[in-house]
Amino acid sequence: MRMPRFLPASGSPLERFLRAMALMAVFAAVLWAFEARFSRLADRLAQEQTVFDPTGTLTDEQRRFLPQAGDDLKSRFGLGLVVRVGQGPVELPPLDEKTVFLGLSVGEKTARAVLPPLAARALGPESEQVVERDILGASLADGRWPEGLCAAVIFLEQQLSGLSRTGDAS
Image 1 (tube, rainbow, N blue to C red):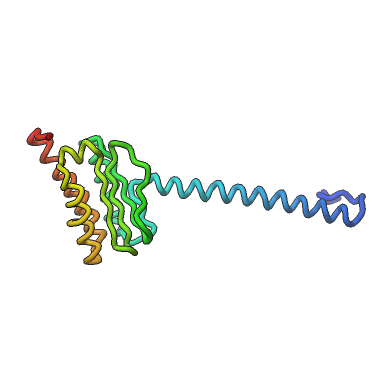
Image 2: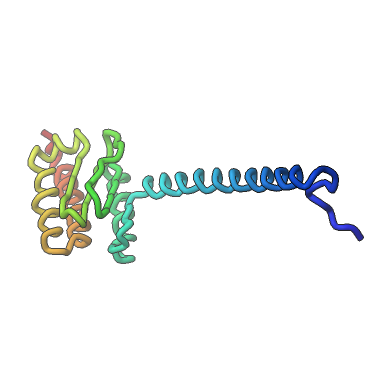
């Protein structure tokens, strides 16, 4: 039984060598294209999650709590939650007018909180600063930022719940 040949037996040795190199170049290009495509896809999917923590510091309980709190904010108040934790500077992702953003830079010890315009007006101008400076900033300084992150989400939910009970929307 004859084995199938990928390269024809005819032609000069140089021609066969060039054909083999061209075949390997095609395989390498296809592999590179797949790797590039799927690495960008994985990064984009990770960025679309409610919680993105490449530091891996959040516990399993905190990783379960934050998306659940995001779901609660969505169902009760129509607000989405985006949490980003990293070592470098806090980068604000593209947000819509219904998304709460909490960003932490563990390496630089900086925090950023962005409330949607309607929620910021209802809670008052100082609410963003309270979350950013008093809750997230203080927890970063203490080295207890995972607890501070959960506390910030709880604080926002309690503040919004207080508004919905009293009906007080400024």
